[in-house]
Image 1: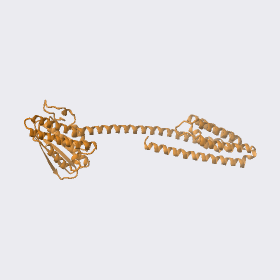
Image 2 (image 1 turned 135 degrees about the vertical axis):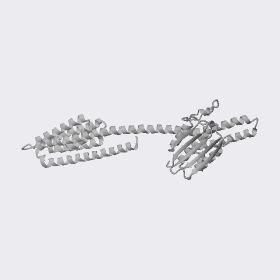
Image 3 (image 1 turned 90 degrees about the vertical axis):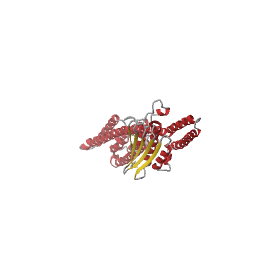
Image 4 (image 1 turned 45 degrees about the vertical axis):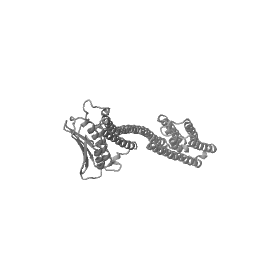
Length: 410
């Protein structure tokens, strides 16, 4: 149950307590005033002691019921105790009405405090019956010419009160249905948001694993295989490959620990995007691939989400170049424009056909790492997560250019 629903129920209970207090107070005031009127005008008819006892009994039953048999909350069924109290109050009032016509003024609080909590099909006939008894009492106790108000006023007042109560009950029922629907809708939206958040987190995790762990493992595998092939013929080169693989392992551990703590790339912890890209170019440079970094435009502050996405995209793009493009040179260019920042990764490799989303390795050279299924789709998700776009331009045998553009308002 939401906080808004709880607050609504608390407010509804406060309103019901306020209404009950007003109705109970009005009944006691009218009961006392009708008794005073009886003593002032009708005591000459005798039976003063009997009527006084009936007044006292009606007051006691009413107060006891208000304390021990409270009315049900709106929309709930009346309890047997409350129905018994209502029957006792009504019966005592009817008997009192036979001796003291001035007790008719107590009818309205009784109607509000009792029958309006009953089902409409029961409350309306009960109210009509009590109103008819009031009219009969007025006619019996009247003298001289019949006053039209005695016949018309009680039914008119009772009709207005009944119409107002019925409308309020129906409106309350509609509001409860509406609130229940809103609560159900909110819960459904909450479930959908949780599912969407889970899916987004799964995609983020898959991208992080692809860019950080999988790419590092692929590089280690390639270096260790090269070291194995050279170990017997060129031990120095083999050891250099092993050292490079060890450095990649150490860096992968740093990234993995930061990844577990849900932090950004390690290169951005203490450096700007430009420094991180320059360091990436140095690390990715090998005897077979030369990577350089250039920066253009007026250098400004790049938002952290853009910096993180751009660095990850550059890492993924260079991994593709290293593993698939058979390129000898790659260039990373970071361009600062007035309202956006552009990252270009260009290589002179084999390229790919237009519309291709992955650069396939040469036939017969596929490895399990090549079946990861991420690459450009993961880069596009990263670009979108920072409000940017990703574009691939490639021509077979003429190289590839990957461009990521980010708005500086991200």
